[in-house]
Length: 322
Image 1 (cartoon, helix red, strand yellow):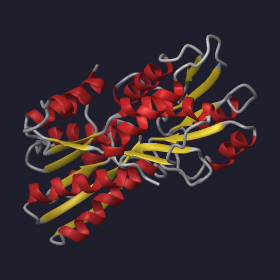
Image 2 (cartoon, rainbow, N blue to C red):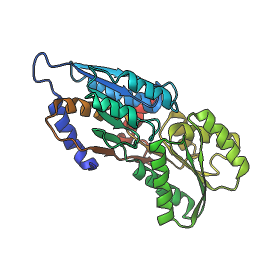
Image 3 (cartoon, helix red, strand yellow):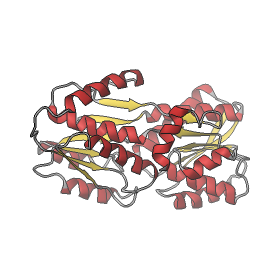
């Protein structure tokens, strides 16, 4: 069951009510959040800030935030999951680095009685309690629509993903490709490449791309590091603003690119809200007195020069640019 944006406020009101302490000495709740990366910048810092804000609303919450140093370190994430699969932990929230390699350790956690909530990226395991994320497929379609308008419905495009196994990146790519195939058949997707986990690896891969295929008209990148690396490569190659570029996520660098007309649009997520709802849902799951949909997806927004200073969009951007 998916929940619409319209129904989200109702759900949040219910979770807030359930999670309110009902006695002077409520039971301690131990919640562990394992992100893809422990980075203190951008997207993951905003997720952490939202999660910590939710944990702070109730005095009996023991909240732990611990993730891998690097966003492609599946082995480190599995080890962290194993470390926190122990008595006393009530809920583990995890943003899977790899969609296909976490089923076994998550099953062990569940069998120990720990509630497992998946956030941000899908996983090939259906026994999670809840899945909370951006609607990644729809976000990919949103990017494709912007690209189609920017190209006038014709041209060639490359899709740049992050690392193999990243469920969120793959869903965004799939949404983009299927939208183009259905609604813009005169746009040809000439390449689908992996750029690696950092803006440095993406920069190097993008430079090689423009050297190999300088005729490409447009490019779509599926996450923050690949977007930053692509922008830097376009500048290095002297073609920033000459190629139609639709990017995922918002950083100071990317926002400046938008202002300079080097980027046609930025797909904006709300990571603060993902973190906040994730921890609130964890708190409600321990109370176990309200039905919460198994799948909660949040809509993304397309940020353009025309709307990026709108109050609602500006507020979401500010969470990621602090």
